[in-house]
Image (cartoon, rainbow, N blue to C red):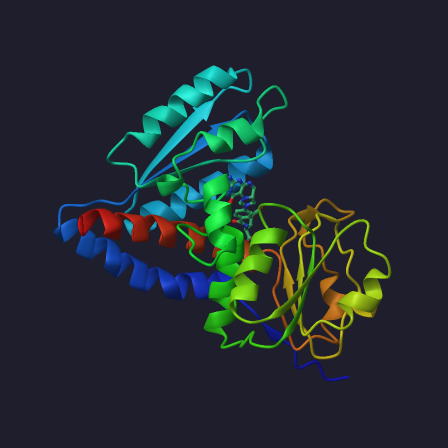
Length: 286
Ligand SMILES: Nc1nc(=O)c2c([nH]1)NC[C@@H]1CN(c3ccc(C(=O)N[C@@H](CCC(=O)O)C(=O)O)cc3)C=[N+]21
């Protein structure tokens, strides 16, 4: 059997987009503005540490001023809120994020609500979410935005397409639905209580999977010649990084697919730094 599936290589797309973003940063620096990104990391979740390291590497490669604020897992909610208030008022920080998850003794909603929506480069505050859904986004959640940037790069037209999203999280499923609706796709969000999941996913022209279950999606879930976007960051039975999609099984059927790693992950970071540069451009233009 000949497999003609096209790989959606997020890593390569990210590298290509880095070139234009580097030029934008250079232009800003000529105007005396250096884009600033800060990341607050609480505790030492090893996956978070890897993601944050990747963000730092990409930001610095582009000439963005990157600041990591690393708190011990025992930090109090008040100390964290104080730091957020400081960053809200720091003129050199165009945007910042609080890397999730935060430890259980900290109220995640309270922390997110404390972020100034104008600096919310994650797009997680209630104001940001509201603006996203009425079609006037201030900022866009990075993973959702990164997926769109990647599909655009490969000229995937979403207009009128049947999109099925597996997973209803605030950080991936819901914002991806909002952005794809805006592109005139017909969007269905499925989740752990969905009945007959296979029947629904196998009608998808574009299937986006963000459930955090290693290799859950096998070819029975996928329509012939579908486009499959895998947001999972899981570990397989050998401890190796893999996605929510059983890549080797599904590749016989899909027209296009993202690998893990090297797919959505690098695009998430691209979307984040793009957002920071955009805010800095707003600052430079008064
Ligand atoms: N406030 C907040 N904002 C986020 O955007 C956010 C977050 N919290 N918490 C966790 C998720 C996850 N996330 C990833 C970022 C980069 C990779 C990434 O670089 N992945 C590489 C490989 C990573 C590895 O080697 O483990 C790849 O797919 O090729 C993955 C996942 C951002 N998230």
